[in-house]
Amino acid sequence: MKVAVIGLGAAGGAAARFLAREGHDVTGFEQFRIGHDRGSSHGESRIVRYTYPDPFYSELMAEAFPLWDALERDAGETFLVRNGCLFIGPAEHPEMIATTQALEAAGRPLETLSIEAARARFPAFRLRPGEEAVLQPEGGFIRAGATVAATARLAREAGARIREETPVAGIEERGDGVIVRAADGSGEAFDAAIVAAGAWAGKLLAGAGLPLRVTREQFLYLGIARGPEQFATERFPVWIDAATYDYGFPEDGRIPGVKISLHRSGETCDPDTVRREPDEAFLRARAAYASFRLPDLDPLPVHAQVCLYTSTPDEDFIVDRAPGMEKVWLASACSGHGFKFAILVGKIAASLAVSGAAARPDEDAAAKGLYSRAMRRFSLDRFKGSRR
Image 1 (tube, rainbow, N blue to C red):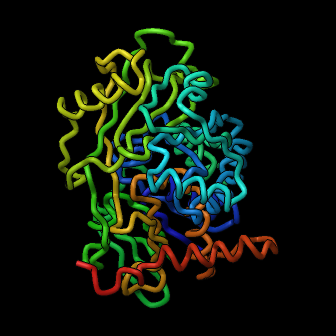
Image 2: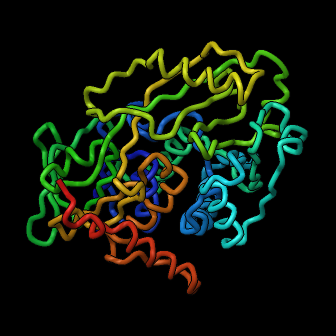
């Protein structure tokens, strides 16, 4: 088949790679350069974790991890750092309880640490009275931007044509195929198309009323004032605060300092006009949080940046036909927690574009059932009656 993939971030790049590897005629359209910093797939790190209060995502991660492992092998690079994931919060917090239950249901190893045990194991952290920490050792982080670059390279090597700096102005179905029109006025016919445009998906499919909200998010790196060995990857897991949704990473040597941020804290924005300068108030608030949680950090940021979230109302993803279309598929690994699943979303989208089914190549009945549940859960039908 001849397939267009529009948007070559984590999910779109993965779809292009899987399609090209299977021998399909693939053209990938990227409005900027591969690895640009204007969307949601750039940067040094994203958390990967089984640590979810929803057991569905713990199960889904078991499907995504092997795909990342295979990407590492194919690329000859290392992207995953499995240094553990620490979930911190009041012992009776609903998300702490639900996360423990979800991990147990999924059969994932975990360890519950008291304040004293957490301090002994991870001396950089401070827990408040009444808090505890749940350590899941299989989690960690992935080098996000490096995976996007490697995926595009592998897609090219498999035969995909990658058209950088080529914005797409429109998509229309005609007969048994799809016409993709670039902003320069040129058009090309395809058998099917995958829209993985992230924050721009709503604009590209403007008439579809997609339930997507784009927000301006921020992150920063704080320098290490004391005990740099405490923040090394082998002694400092990725972490999430269940009560506030602050989160962070170890010192990885790519950018000086320790990266921290706050999940879903930004205001609605237009991806084409978003203000790219970080806010002083946000930086001060995160530094104030770190002064208790991570007191050996320097409160002065050494680096800060703006990025984008594209979120659905229920924080799940979208993998479905574009509304009113048969040959155009929407793939959105979104809502601020999708990067770890983007390679799986791209694989599913590639399968849908070719056959209309989220096929899995083996006979694992449980995994096939999980794919079926994913398609139901990520369907646009769940928003019927609530679209704009």
